[in-house]
Image (cartoon, rainbow, N blue to C red; front, top):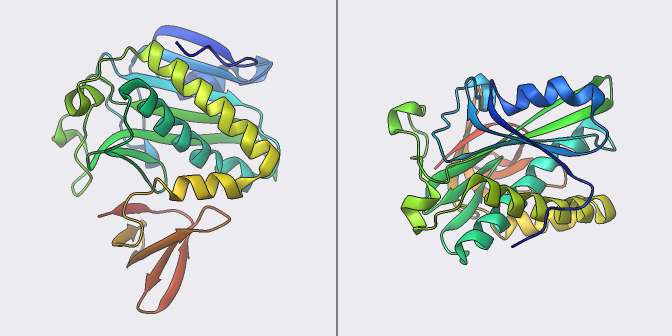
Length: 249
């Protein structure tokens, strides 16, 4: 059994509106990085304010931390968290086959969406006082297809796809340990080794994908992720860097 990482706190709640909201409440008094998890969330959310379904037995957790550096540096923690999620999945299943990372912040299993990451930060100007990394993982049950937006990948669960039964507490221990390792690497060596590791696990690298924002759509070959974490597509009009979008296959 993996040990809980030194220097990281843990708050376990029976029920909360969302672990991200709880992180915002305790941020002023937090003395160091702390994981917050709940058995039940009443108002869970995903990217762009979308609802996040959280059936019983799945993981709902948020890591609250005080990051060093710029807001852009803080945002790169989504890649750190994705790598940690990938490693935790491998640790609890004993296999890497079938798992992949989808830009900007999803973990896939056998082509379906297994987990999502959502970052929220507070601060003034160019200073980030707190960063919250919200993570949801379908461990035991996937939300129904009608609970996701049209065109989105089908939700899958770890149990249904691999047969691996793991409690949220055990999964979080693996996740927290993996995150601590990648966070140390990021602090010491910067984004480049994280970027390289992420790309080696990337879904649809070298294939044609679609990136959509609220105002535009770009279709092109997924070429890389650049040093700022932007998605880089090779299109008919040349290479295009995209800082934020939803990706569709």
